[in-house]
Image (cartoon, rainbow, N blue to C red; front, side, top):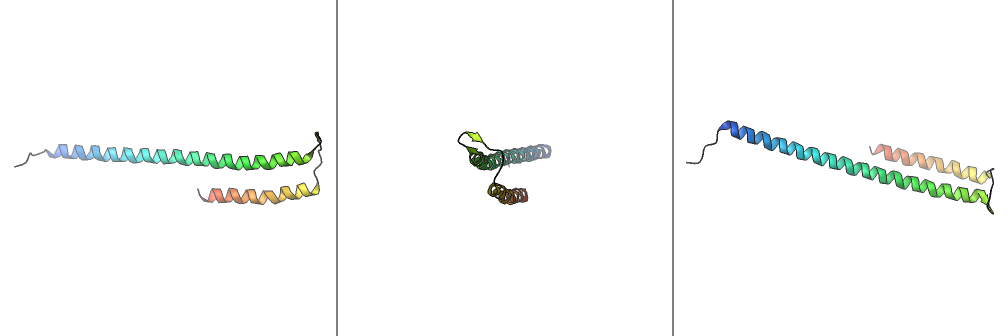
Length: 98
């Protein structure tokens, strides 16, 4: 005959195993959330850097021979208006995934 294990020990072992499984799942969930946050940070950084490049080119366009002009040309106003919907579309795309 085999060794007989009391039921209470079996239940305790099962509860410990279940608790360990839950803890592991929670840790994996936290790691996934952390990775997702890191990805969101990277996306934000990339979007900001794209915006920075566009802004720098606008600054360069407004600067002539070291002197900064305050008035924008009609073309620059039109370009700025064209950029706004694209930015909104990116934000909508990003928010739809969450």
